[in-house]
Amino acid sequence: MQYVYLAVSPSFVVGSDGYIYEGRGWMSVGAHTKGRNTVGYGVAFIGNYTAHLPSQYDMELLHHHLVKCGVSNGFLQNNFTILGHRQVVATTNCPGDSLYSEITTWEHYKVRRMLYLEM
Image 1 (tube, rainbow, N blue to C red):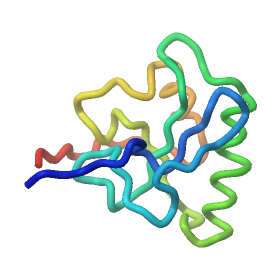
Image 2 (image 1 turned 30 degrees about the vertical axis):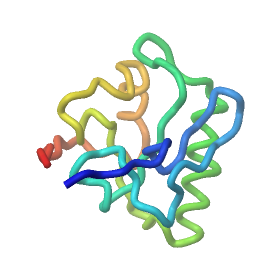
Image 3 (image 1 turned 90 degrees about the horizontal axis):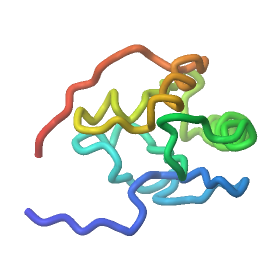
Image 4 (image 1 turned 180 degrees about the horizontal axis):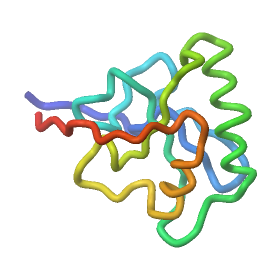
């Protein structure tokens, strides 16, 4: 079976320019976590966050705008879970060590390793 992917795989992308960009959005299935795309949304931060974090403003865009939009419009449940990409895809260090460490302090973060499915 051959798959055709759109240019942007995650649901949303947080730019380093103070904007959130819609990738696949709330209404379409993303292509960010092989075998798990139908059970969540993917948000990517533009940049390399192995040694440093995105700006505080960029992280607040996610918390105070995108998440609130998702909850208030019924796309996210109030008890949603945040996972780092590396918890879902075994072959990546994404989102980078610094950003992953930051994510582990966020309210909805869950400590879990999910099964990576080969397809």
